[in-house]
Amino acid sequence: MFWLLLYVVVVDALVASFEVIASNQHLLAVRGRPAVLGCEFTPDSDLSNLVVTWQRQEDSRVVHSFYYQQDQLDRQCPKYRNRTSLNVSELYKGNASLRIAAIRPKDAGWYLCIVTNTKGTGRVSMQVTYGALYSEPRLSIHVNSSALKVQFETEGFPKPEVIWLGEHNRNLSYHLEIYGQTEDGLYFVKSICEAQKPMLNVTFILKNPLLNQHLQRQVFLNYDTTDHVIIALVALSVVCILLIIGIIWLAVQKQNKHRSSL
Ligand SMILES: *[C@@H]1O[C@H](CO)[C@@H](O)[C@H](O)[C@H]1NC(C)=O
Ligand SMILES: *[C@@H]1O[C@H](CO)[C@@H](O)[C@H](O)[C@H]1NC(C)=O
Ligand SMILES: *[C@@H]1O[C@H](CO)[C@@H](O)[C@H](O)[C@H]1NC(C)=O
Ligand SMILES: *[C@@H]1O[C@H](CO)[C@@H](O)[C@H](O)[C@H]1NC(C)=O
Image (tube, rainbow, N blue to C red):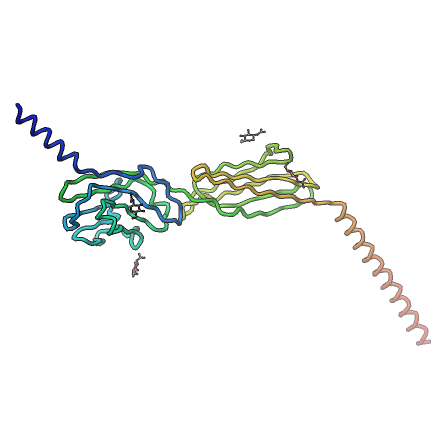
């Protein structure tokens, strides 16, 4: 009985002596930027028995592996080629963190960090979530006889929250179109606010809650139609005057010709 107890204690101690832990079980990765997936283990001064494998949990695709004291990338999934790195000097300290360069939409998902050395073997899983900052909104203004339309277009991920404010921070009604993810993994967002002529003072606000992004763009436009009417009237009068001068000139010319032929 005593021996059995001792055995259990010793086995427990051995198992507990080796650990693999994730520095962050939910990592937010931003499109185009690098991400570091943190994984730490109980170190062993000798790297010759160390095997580190990073895999996708969903389908066991190899993301990165290291053994015989070097990177082993023959079985690496092509999607990760030239984009992953482990820091060898950190491996001595029990840090198997993986750096992935230029995050893409398909990098989102679950990852496994599996480590084996002379002290034991273990694994940990972690989730990577993908987000993309919305690009600078492109403004366009459409004017027709009855309305003024202000439109902003931008791309990002995930779906944003949009509001339009008028004067005194009043909520305005608006039109919002969100087109499905492009192959870049971005939503194309188009929002239109219709305003009353002749003056326009609106603020477009777009939020990406996942990335804490808050874009705010104000549009102020004084579209004074009376100016245009005046310009049109002046232009019309100039044309009329020129026309009259032309007719008189032609008549005079004709009369001169008639006189000289006599
Ligand atoms: C990876 O880098 C090597 C050498 O720089 C290059 O020949 C290869 O085409 C790259 N592979 C990909 C998928 O970018
Ligand atoms: C582990 O290494 C990565 C670089 O590979 C570094 O960014 C991170 O800070 C290191 N973690 C610890 C706990 O030292
Ligand atoms: C436009 O509206 C904002 C918010 O109500 C206000 O602060 C600003 O003074 C207005 N601008 C003009 C030019 O009226
Ligand atoms: C304006 O709309 C936003 C979002 O729909 C809402 O949170 C806010 O309370 C509204 N503000 C007013 C003054 O109605």
